Every structure is written in C-alpha cells, then in structure tokens.
Amino acid sequence: MKLPFKKKKEVVFKTVEPHQGFILRNQENELTDFRDIDIEDYLADMFVTPEQFVVLTAPKAQNKIRFVQACTHDGEIEVELGIEDGGTRLFYKMCSEEECYRIFLDFYENRLIPQMEEYKPVEF
Image 1 (cartoon, helix red, strand yellow):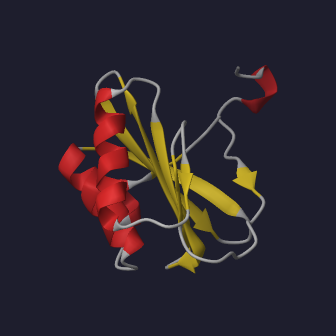
Image 2: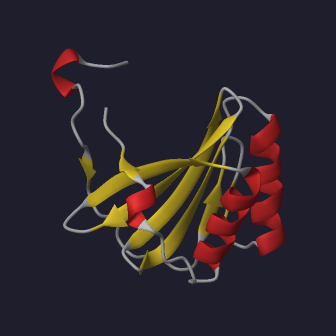
C-alpha cells in the first residue's frame, strides 16, 4: 500500500544489532547453518516462483552492506542492498540470474564491493 505522503521518499531503517553468523531466509524458511549451495538453491527457487524472495543477512555490515535481498518482477530480477550508514538504506538494481548469484555469493564470501553508480535508492 502506498501512502500519498510517502511518495518518492527514501526510507531509512534502524540498524540491526550484530548477531552470530549469516542468516538465509525466504518465505518458507530461515537458515542459520547453511552453505553456498543452499544460497544457490534458494535463488534458483526464487527465479521460478512468483512472489518468492531471498534475503541473506551478515552478522555485521561488510563494506557497509548488512544484507542483500532479491525478488522477481515480471520475469526480471531485482537485487537490493541494505547499506548501513547512519541507519540502513536500500539500493536496488535489475540484473541477470548469473549476476544475482554472483552478488549473493560474493557477499557471503565477504568479497562484494558494489559499484554504487549501478544502484538506485529504493523509494516508497
């Protein structure tokens, strides 16, 4: 639901407290003990299941990124980054399945250095 007074406003979320290990979740499950193959399985399911999403949250921010999340819109894949910088802001870009896998796996391996000029702020 879009509220009229919220149009085109960047939303800032509260920073999440640090926790142990990564958390991988979708609409059905939340895992705290998993491997990269589980991330790939969750993403593969999302690519073929409308309304499905995948969120991978780090124990603490890596290169200012606290989490990556993805969903599909009309056959396109939207990846969002939760950037911690005095609160958490969402940035998104549309990408291919291959790029989506790479973003999630690089984040999981603490190797994700996003080219922020490729991302736009999520506005509600």
